[in-house]
Length: 182
Image 1 (cartoon, rainbow, N blue to C red):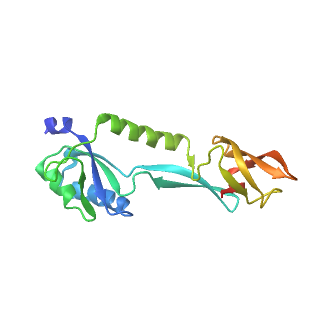
Image 2 (image 1 turned 90 degrees about the horizontal axis):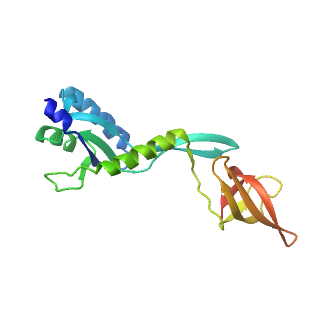
Image 3 (image 1 turned 60 degrees about the vertical axis):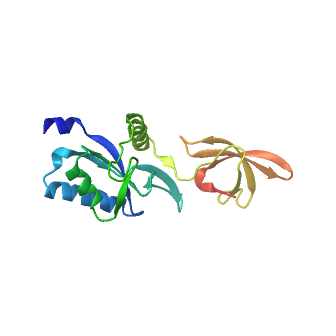
């Protein structure tokens, strides 16, 4: 048994889109029911925290960054393979062959884990802006004006937008919630 504990690797399982959480929960239940805890490690639905403005309020929510996929840390053997493959709403493993799935590389696992950790430390805005992009001001004294994004400050959720007022470009400092992509 202790040898198999050493051989746990990360595999990507394709699930029906929208059912990733249900697949995760079902896998955990089946592992306990079949007393196979020593063959499995973590089961993750990779999500990141995003912040959006709704009705003037900052709201945090989570967004899947690999929709339709569940990451499973497991020791690959016939019993564990069948348990995962025969779980409701699982379409199969990604990578390798149908009979012999391939694990993802340690580098890929590290990248995913870092992205999960970054998301917890600093949630990303739901809408991403970039310099040179045209936006429409929807709130504040410059409502209904169009402008060009000059600078983006994700830490403070603010933009510097160049708005044309009386034919002159005027830089205006705005919150993400005050603009929308044109």
